[in-house]
Image 1 (cartoon, helix red, strand yellow):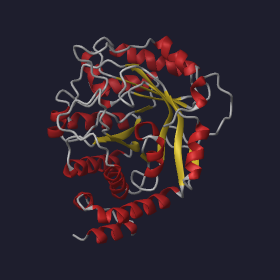
Image 2: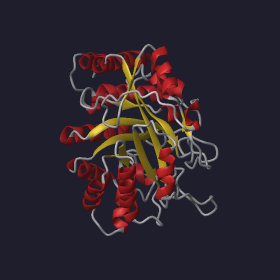
Image 3: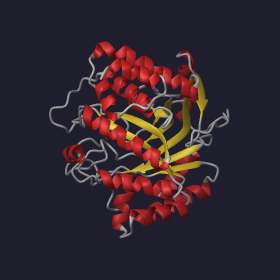
Length: 375
């Protein structure tokens, strides 16, 4: 197969095959500019030069996790500091600190001390206190864990969460959707088939989800393409994914747990994966996200030239995005994000969890979080 022919086909709006995406991922660096260019052109056709973000707050209700993942900072080993568990009142108070956000995302580890009933009550209380906000909460991994402890099926757990007011879910805990890879990095994480089935259950219950990929650890290009193909197949079946989120594994000296990983970040390789994903998904999954807090704002902006059209949330209230051991808040003012987007020659647009435009309310917040701390 000719990689240039594949790129021409993509420009003609043809769907490329997984084997063709693999070929693009296996090309040497001389083809990178062409891959970037085609991904950028596909993005321009889909989004007309706009780059979105959501003025939302992500809150971790617990940072303790029993899952033995080598990649996740939620995991608590014997000599680690204990994780946190916020009360519902604490969470409500944190949301009150940012009165002008349009959505809330709740996430956490797999904490044996948290009953499934807590998740139901949490959703109900947040929805009751903030009925105008869009609530996104939990991942397939969390649903599987807490449903099992409550002795209900994942489908029943999702139905109960939907009745409580849950509107959308995170697509985290996907990592790489290949069981051999998952066994290496997190042997007791839910299997690929379980992740897929829970996502399908959510979509069937009217709960949309994101999809994600954590890469740059022990996987190879074949695993990446398997992951992309599975997500695209699911999107064709359900249409329930709102976005695809890139999580490159960035090694931290204090928390690196894989053996033999390279601490040097090759951003060109990361951008190449983003670009191939854009070409592969096309209009079927139009929203690709490179969160400014995970990539750093300069690299997230650079990613908008290789297929990315969304920069994620404004406030990350968990302290784990950068794998720090102590809780902290990472925040950027909407105005700062918009300024960076305009400087890159793009048009900023604020959106909700479902990528609908949201009005920009320039209200003065009582929170100090809006001073901006983007890196």
